[in-house]
Image (cartoon, rainbow, N blue to C red):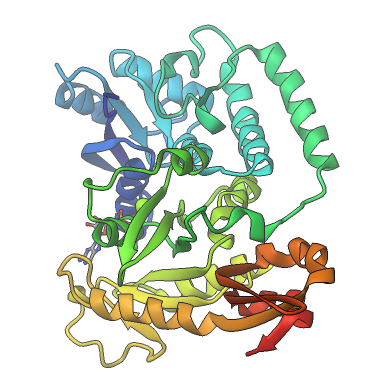
Length: 406
Ligand SMILES: Nc1nc2c(ncn2[C@@H]2O[C@H](COP(=O)(O)OP(=O)(O)O)[C@@H](O)[C@H]2O)c(=O)[nH]1
Ligand SMILES: [Mg+2]
């Protein structure tokens, strides 16, 4: 069994957003496969250039963590390479990571396509390169675990010369790649399970919802699918098999350089039969939905979706919430049946049941488009084959010529 990495958070207090940034960090730690184990906070009036936070606070943290082995320290902000080293040194050479390192680690876990992996690796290498200078480099102190992992369960390189070469290689490769988004082939698994993806801001309850729908812990990951996407799980709704995929989630104050890497982690969300846009009913859900929709639209997203407002337990009343959403509380297990019904309805309306007639002399033509349909039955008649099938409405034009009854 893999040891779960414990993570302690240092939260600088710079403005009134610190509390939600802290909660987001806790959710991010979980997304990186770590376990949150406590926090400390410090008001920042003036940044200490050597260690960011004051030395008194560092001493306090050192004694808090005294005797605790293997606890990683997350600084929930951005550190320079030397600040990282100095904090680590002040804390008995503990492993110290900053917010960007954590975010990149999560992106690496979530990158699925080869292009996405290249993009994330490039962002990681560019971030660690300047952190490898001098003795006792920041990366060599990562040891392993969060921050040292590249896409696809690889270990990040630490040799500066190799990294320089690799960065040039990745930039060239990405420049050459014509983005090929074969939405169809990556969707739908062998048994016809439809893919539902959870998209939205971090900390809105996507992973909790995924657990609630799939039955936390009890479900074995489908081995084949797990290797493609570490965040996919199977579940059954209304007697039908589904694959749920959990995305990284939008992150506030995402460093600008990471935007491309972030988008590539959304690819798995784009290749779905239905997307659930999850927002926090007690937060700025309008902004959350808008950002989600705009970003996905820019990536070519054209799938049906449902807007879901979670954490309704935190509101006195849902009367003022927009009517086009499903209201739920994963915590109180409320609204989940309504959500399942909405999912089934939405999927039913995006598929058409059709009967095709394929003349025998056009069988080879049909074989080229048959991947667009889910065949239910075939029967053979005079002059041709009858196929009863369901088809995603967006693929109807591909099989237009064969449709006998609609
Ligand atoms: N009050 C309340 N908290 C919730 C609810 N669902 C999730 N949470 C909490 O919100 C935090 C973030 O949840 P998580 O599932 O990790 O969000 P994700 O980042 O979107 O995957 C956790 O502390 C959850 O316990 C809910 O329905 N009500
Ligand atoms: Mg999550």
